[in-house]
Image 1: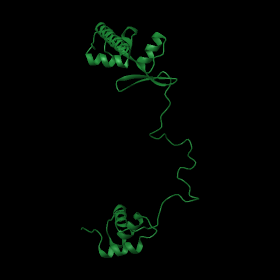
Image 2: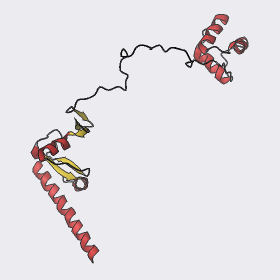
Image 3: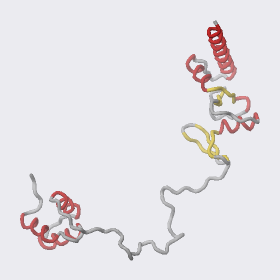
Image 4: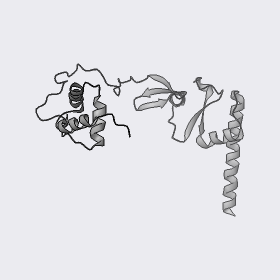
Length: 189
């Protein structure tokens, strides 16, 4: 095992470690033995030899913090955010978002609800017929359910052509309705 402190240095540390910080102890050792030990090295020595100095640098009653009287002079910390005005837009994970009075909302849902004067429920999604999620024109947005989107992608009915996408959505809706009717007929028998 490599020891960085000699026997004399260790004895000196044992005699002087009480009620002083590791930095103060390092200064004492370096001054006495003409060395360059750091506070970290002395802290490690104290930990490995189970020496508790009893020194702590906690605030004690009557101590005054360094930033007393600086109200309003301090800068915002990393967690602070300036409020964003309603109507602000930004992109996140490839989706456009807009700030509304109730919070952030997908811009495609917001635009669809404005165009059609309706409220979408949580199961409904907006599908871009031309495949371009930056094209928010009224004729490019259509409402589909989560189940319909799953079937569209499962069966490969997604294209860059709006007419083919409309046809694919209608095929999926038709197949889902046929399955539903078929399942109801089986229950009745």
